[in-house]
Length: 480
Ligand SMILES: [Zn+2]
Image (cartoon, rainbow, N blue to C red):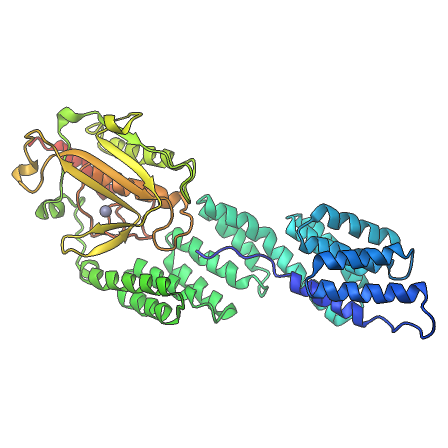
């Protein structure tokens, strides 16, 4: 997800000051007066401000004030405020702006800069109020237009900011409502971002058709943003429309400049081409997928005498993307399977990996799982199973279905494709999937709603499906 975008109000502000400067009448001819010196200094200060030499601008503009009161004092103070704002020195900016308005309560640039400072510091209501004051004082259509654009940015940003937080927390419904509010400001400088985020959220909510529409809207606002094609490709994949998915991913790969991203997209296209047959395979309406697993020798059951299974859940402090709540998701994942088994499976947590039957560790490393045909595929998590050393009978008298002696799960702390932060739902889904492997489901389901589906699908809720539950029950119910 590409979600980070900051208000682009700086450019507006600079042009505003440039216009302000040009509006100054030339100084009177004749000998140097205090006013004329102030005028020269203030001109120089604005020039420095416009060329982003903020420190120099502040020094020059302070010289203006040292000359004593002049008609340029309030303007110089407003410009000092603007320079501090650009340097993110907000208390200094606010005090200069206040002073400017004390000198001249009609100093409109001070109000405009106040709006920018409040926007930066997330005081959206104050920002809109300051902008209203500016509009009352605005003297040209250009200034009014600038104010309206900034107003739209503030109104949109007021919703985007909490939406971004909600996305991070996996609260997709909340994020959706906030983003729909933000989209009411369309067209705004943020429209592209807003609709891309809406696409992301709708896809998370399992509504990939709406996500595609949001992507198309985003493209109208940002025709050059080819990354949207990637998301459209993912959505078509969710919908089982593999050919459309491949077409959009190819479009993305062709336009992508970054070699690594390009290669990753190609890899994904290859995976899809490989999956095409699997995805096209008729999905049986059977209540579980045990038979398919057995047919491929993909069940590795724990012996009843091994219960309760000792589970060690590691911690990943300091790893990129890792958050404190990750172990809770791992715990929840095991708990979900235990509950689903109706008590046939039992787990206890242990404090040391060396005491465990199942060990779960977090990593930033890229993980690849190797399939039966030798194909390697990028994965959010992998589980390595070791056969039991004791001669447990294999499951269903199938020698391929050996009893498991130890399992090690590794889960990547960042999204394996985008390399951005994982949402809580991402982590829970991955934990559920890998715990399913560790608890005996050695293979995958061909149905996209199951947590044990062979690929990541946004049709999955971060929860076990009925078929997942029925499958684990059948594995541990059987006596042999
Ligand atoms: Zn898997």
